Length: 183
Image 1 (cartoon, rainbow, N blue to C red):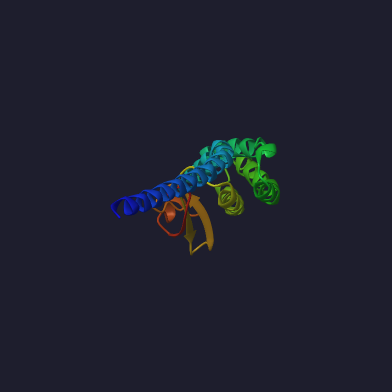
Image 2 (image 1 turned 120 degrees about the horizontal axis):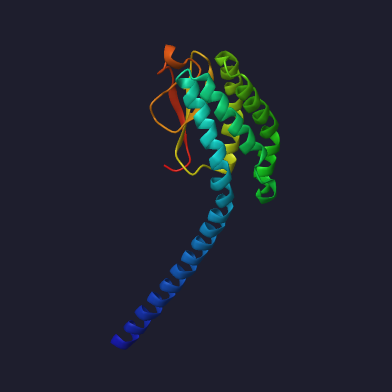
């Protein structure tokens, strides 16, 4: 009887171990596909997010010149995105948002001394970048902030509100609406 129970216990344990091994293999296979899909996302969209955040931070401190410089870099990063490495959802989102984002970035770059123009373009740019980050992913935690006075959103890398629409005149006007990326 002990031999029979031992055999049944051994067989059950072996089956469970094989089942777990297969589950781990599937999970790891899916994780590898996710990682390879996001390799593109994080290496290339990361530059776009970096320059977008530089524009945001410049506007939040009323620095039109820094916003113009980052706007030019953002335009280049958006234009240089390697479309052949995108999956179908990424291609669709890029096609729907890139032309406007490139135009907005260019206007921010050209608006060197006109911070109001830059802020108007930033509002439109923020929507496009948000749409792209939702589909491409982010390699860092981002916060979608909202300004009730402007009725507009932006992405931020920090939890503290640093309002790019009003800069130093109302630096903390806003609230976090959503958390994206790594958490």
